[in-house]
Length: 378
Ligand SMILES: Cc1ncc(COP(=O)(O)O)c(C=O)c1O
Picture 1: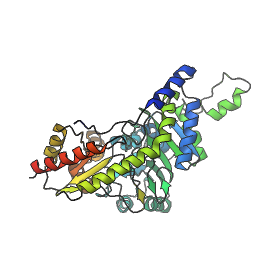
Picture 2: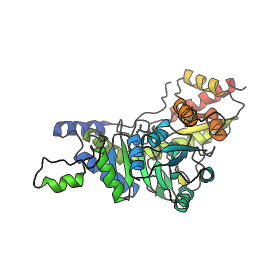
Picture 3: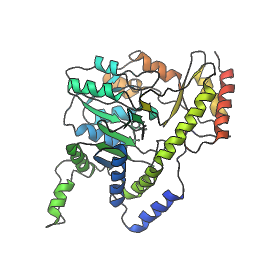
Picture 4: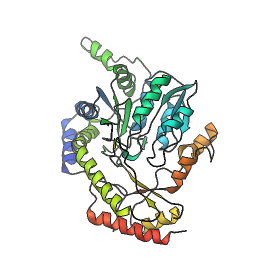
């Protein structure tokens, strides 16, 4: 049996809507983007959602919109894009430790790293579970810092009944491995009108849509650039896929949760394996299903055995960002700086997780784990 790490949940509805857009004659940023933005903002529970070409663009623009430069505290245990957005927006990344059990940034460690140069905090909601946002927002208030939520890996996860990405500026990814997909794409959510205006302008060459709307009445050919912007727009073909996927988001997340519960019960008693934790205030939406292995298991051998059996297991993330060559060179980071994250990097395994997984496939994964464990004890 072959079980990939993830498979997008698509059917004829996505194909049909793409064909409709292709036939409509309007392919670029347009009415489907607007519809997607309205639906997404409503789902997250915020005033604005702005479609973009990626989550990385959303993170970069969310930081730039704050108009402050300095240090931003983020976890080292994340995908390198989180830190790259800090650097490309002209700020300095300061890495913090994560909590081993949830893989999310540790608010106690954040506070230790706040200096007079700190301007912001970027919690990353790892693999489907929202960070401890009450403590993080309290720290931000206390120290006058902005917060950018990297919610690339968590679309629809809840903390204290609120959707991740609604606490501050939320940045989401629609890459095919995420809770919902448009192939490539991202979106930024905010209640702040100024952030909305800045991001909408910067994504389209710095041409302010409100200025354009104002001038359009008399001279529709004028496009006034008020800033030196980018082209970070989403196109209507992808936004249409996003609208269809949004309609399935709760169903897809419910299926992920059901598969995770099943794996939890099947793996719970196995020696050497620790199943993921859902924290008390959270609704986890399992964009990834990750286990950790005790030191008694050779992880490299375990992964190779699973992959030989057709189970697309992997590691997210190895290396942690502070051990990426660029960050070691540019910021002098070195091995030993973040012991919890380094240990997690060595012990974590990502197992297949996607809505369409069947019971036979889940059972196959479980029995492959059982036999791989037997062969990889050190
Ligand atoms: C935590 C995190 N942040 C940012 C990104 C970047 O998202 P995108 O590929 O949409 O730019 C990813 C993508 O995988 C991610 O996992």
